[in-house]
Amino acid sequence: MRIKKDDTVEVIYGKDKGKRGKVLSVDRENDRVIVEGINIVSRHMRPTQDMPQGGIVENEAPIHISNVMLVCPRCDERSRFGVDVLDNGEKVRVCKSCDEVIDK
Image (cartoon, rainbow, N blue to C red; front, side, top):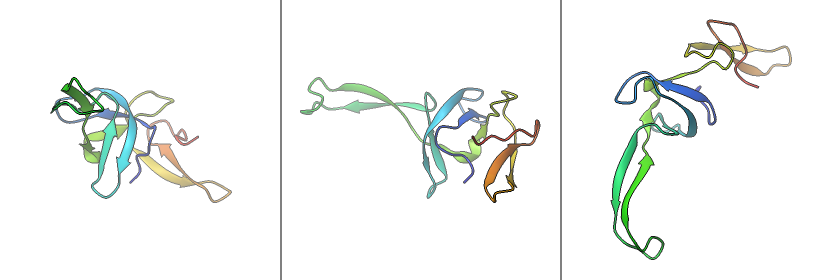
C-alpha cells in the first residue's frame, strides 16, 4: 500500500468525486482509507452516559484505496507516482509528472 497517513489525496470516483482531504488512517488488511471530510455518514446514537442527549452523529467512513489518488505537493495536482531508491538505500515516492520526491 503506497498511500500513507497524513498524505493529501483526491477522490476520483463516487459521491465525493473531486474533493481533497488528508488521510487520517489506513486499513491495509481491507485496502481502505479514512479521509478527512470525505464519505460522511450519519449515525443515530441512543443516549448513553458518555453522550446523555443522544442524537445524530456524523463521521467519516472508510473508502476503498482505488478510489483515491495522491496529490503531489509541488505541482498540486493528482498524479501517479513511482518508487526510487536514493544513494543511501532509502526508498522514496516520486511524482511521475514533475519528478519531485513526495516523501519528506
